[in-house]
Image 1: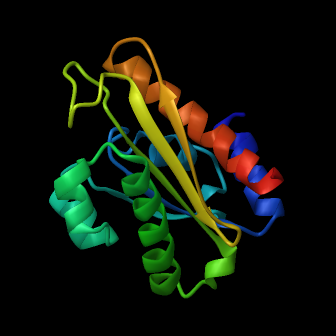
Image 2: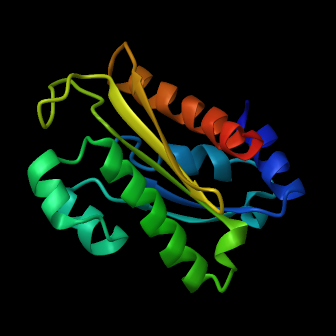
Length: 162
């Protein structure tokens, strides 16, 4: 699914996106806002690259980060839930109309938190509760980040279809 198709799909469902990115460093939001009309769907994004920001800006449990590290499915879930609740409040948009999306993982070149390069967790939080997907992507840093963005588009649609 392309960014344009996803924007159109979400617009027809009258849904908005709040995005929390780590390993993608803004790439997911950038891809979406390259589409004309994206402002009808994308509320905004936070790039929480360091763990302290995941905790302070997104509400990820600091003890979880200290024990599991940033590359963890529960961290990705809490990032998605945190961005959803914070941005729906700030945008004065009912939470039921907002999807929180997060990306967390290891793009390389070195492992992180004991996780090998290519380990990625993507989470979506919406009115059906949170869902997280685990991936092991291959390639260089850029390729892993691009695969993460593509997978995020597919998982958003999958979440809504399921």
